[in-house]
Amino acid sequence: MPLPMDADTRVVAARDQVSVEVEGEAVILSLADGVYYGLDPVGARVWTLLEQPRTVAELRDAVVAEWEVDAPTAERDLLALLDALAGRGLVEVQPAA
View 1 (cartoon, rainbow, N blue to C red):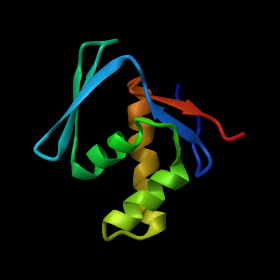
View 2 (cartoon, one colour):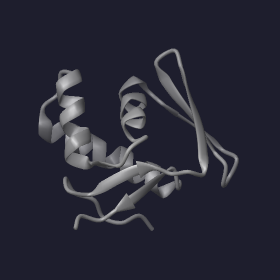
View 3 (cartoon, helix red, strand yellow):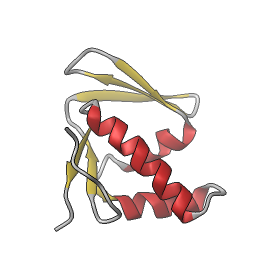
View 4 (cartoon, rainbow, N blue to C red):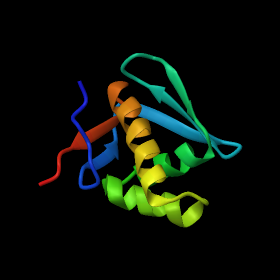
């Protein structure tokens, strides 16, 4: 079960996957279950940022800077995406210190 996340939670892409960008979207293959997952352009940008450990706040700020969205909406949607990715083992979640 994924850990609860907030703005200070650190997240990074799991090692047990491979991914590629295709026409602005991300396609991720989970090596653990052999299932492919797809992300839209915003999700693909977040995925690129997750190559290095980032806090939810850093990811939110990047989304707000690049797309027309307010911070509360961006954070809510980001937490939902990260929770889904964590539930599938595609990201590693590190609780805030």
